[in-house]
Structures are given as structure tokens and as C-alpha cells.
Amino acid sequence: MLGILSAGIAPGLALLSYFYLKDEYEPEPVSFVFRTFLYGVLLVFPIMFIQHVLETEQLLKSDLLDAFFGSGILEEFFKWFILFYLIYQHVEFDEPFDGIVYGVSVSLGFATVENIFYLVANGIEHAMTRALLPVSSHALFGVIMGFYLGKAKFTKGNKAKWILLSLLLPILLHGSYDFILISLENWLYIILPFMVFLWWFGLRKVKKAKILSANHFKKQYPEQKAQAPV
Image (cartoon, rainbow, N blue to C red; front, side, top):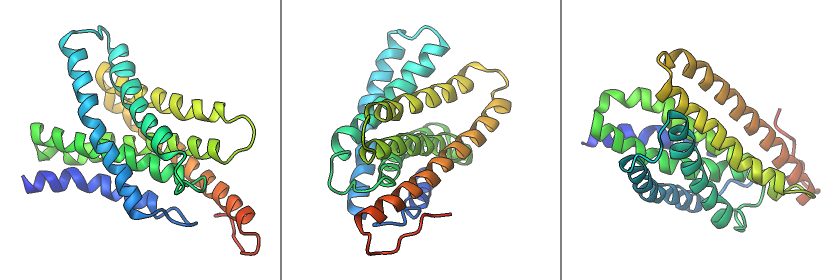
């Protein structure tokens, strides 16, 4: 059991540490990042209950509905709700890159508990596949969600489009990910390039967020020298 817990927790903590250390300006308090992670942990239970009801009542009668509503919309909306209503206005969310840190935190809180449950039910031999696919994809959905929330908070003018993108893009990507897995016979040949694209897209958002944070830092502290990451 200890091995399963370790294998279930390790990928989430590794990815969270990776994205946390990318924050070069005023890193977030570990305690608040951990609290956001716990919000994601707690989300698992209401979401699993709703998914159980949907499955038991057979309300989602196609793979498309199952992928986009049963997983994409349901999971990403709850994560977005936590970020927007509990984190977005918080004083610790004080630069664009922080959106990515908190987006990843809540996503990996959810993904870590989901991963542990899966490994308990199906065995530790699935640990590597789970780390490379579901856990990584949740982290990257969080990157994209957090990037657009960070952009919305620190961009003057029309914020609504960025807030909308912070919800719709993760739903679209998450739904597409699940649809590939549950509906395509040769899913492995599609999911691998999809994950490459997801990492490329997510890391582009990381790079852009670092530049936005550098520019924000310069405006906030003009007397200090801050260079945008290359």
C-alpha cells in the first residue's frame, strides 16, 4: 500500500515542483500553494459522485458526451470555479505567472487523488502510464487555465475574453483527450502526438507568462532591474 501511495503521489509533486520553480519573481508561499492543492484534492469527491450518478443513470449515451461533459466540462469547471472565486482575488495572486502556479496546484491536487484511487483499484504496474498521461495532462490543463486567468487579472481593458478562454480551452483539450482514449481503437497513435502538442502548447504559455511577470515586475519596481526570461 505504501508503494501505491508513493507512486500515486510522486508524479503530482514532481510536476508541481517543476512549475513552482519556474516562478522567478516573488515565488508563492508554499502554504498557500499547498492549500490550493488541497482544494483540488477535495474536488475529487463531489466530482466522482456526480460522475457515478451520470454513469448509473446512463445519462451520457455517447462517447462524445462522456468525454466532453462527463470529464471535460465537469472537472475543468470545478477547478476553474475554485481558481476564479477563491484564488483570483487573493492578495498572493500578484503577478501573471501566479495563475499558472495555482492552476497547476488545484489540477494536480485533483489528479493525485484520482491517480491513487486508480492504482489501488488496478495495480501499481499502471503507475508509469498514469504519470505520463492523466497526471501530466491535468497539470497542463492547469497551466493553460492559469495562464489565461493571470492574463485576465493583469491586463487592462476587456478581461472577459481571457476569463472565458481560461475555462473553454481546458474543457476543449480535456474533452479531446478523453475522447481519444475512450472512442478510438488505435488511441495510442493519436494520444502520443496529442501529448506532445499539449506539452508544447503548455510550455509556450509558461514562457509567455514569465515574460508577462517580468514586465509586471518592472512596472511595479522600476528602480530594480528585471529582465524577461529568454
